[in-house]
Length: 421
Image (cartoon, rainbow, N blue to C red; front, side, top):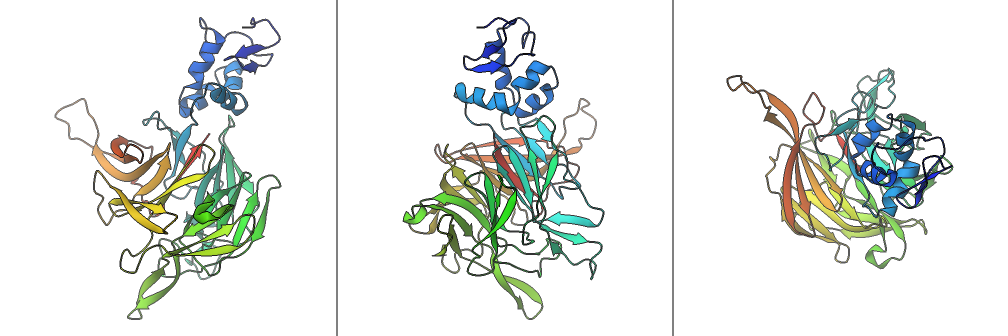
């Protein structure tokens, strides 16, 4: 290994520590051993420790850390990002599953004094970039007051930087909330459908069939072929070669395309049982057909996808009540995979996301807090219960964590996504 006085030092046998980083990383340890130790720390700890010294800031930067993890053949680092409510008012928070007690807050997105109540936005990660797109909100300048409007705003935050801050991107061409969204090949984002419906006013709202994609290289939005019909409340993902098609496709599932009223008063959504896919090279939509027969279920539940190391989707799962179903591309149907270890009341909603090849079901709860005084009345503390299912081992595990929030998390308005660094 090169001496500390040499123009550069080699770490872990492959990486070079540039000149100017004098002194050892950890006194008493060889730099290659110290680099491995720092590389194995959780993301919140790495974020805090970047300010320790110039050498640590250099090592824990994305340009050095990610190649080092690859050279050590460490698995990709996956984080959960939770948006408890309106991201302009409450900070998004990150959780590293390697340390379920270590939540890391991110800055809120820039807020406007006229806009409030943002919901139904899309939170998605592409590499180290975290995007917040669209949504439905209220505008104090609009008339009539209290009528929700769709948003076209787009924000991005780079988690690889030492100082996290949101960057305002060009607006989407079409304002939309509650829409399908997925990472596009090449580092962009593709979106489709959506509308203006807001959780506080669930009886009406506009819908759109438009599709567009964001080119991260040129920082521009481009319109694509619109869906055959309007659809909102849908989910999306990119699959390769599904259904015998030899190209990447942007799949859109579920949602609603119109609504009626029962007795002329009570609104009733007409949910979609079918799916459709956009060929990202051909630019054409193909209709997949109904995924279940009438009466089997009312609507599509929360969906989570599991991808291989190359990023290609391998499995699609849906949470329907207390059961998890697996989607079969060949038969265009859902088959039961597993049942939750702990039942969830029908009146409660939960989060559903994939992480490290496992499915995570999140439920908000209140648990007694620990106290040193046995006679003192126990106070309840806000908690998140994780039920984790491994599809390969077909085994469950459950753990509880305490996020830094002051009110229970309502998954009607909260948003979840996973970040792979």
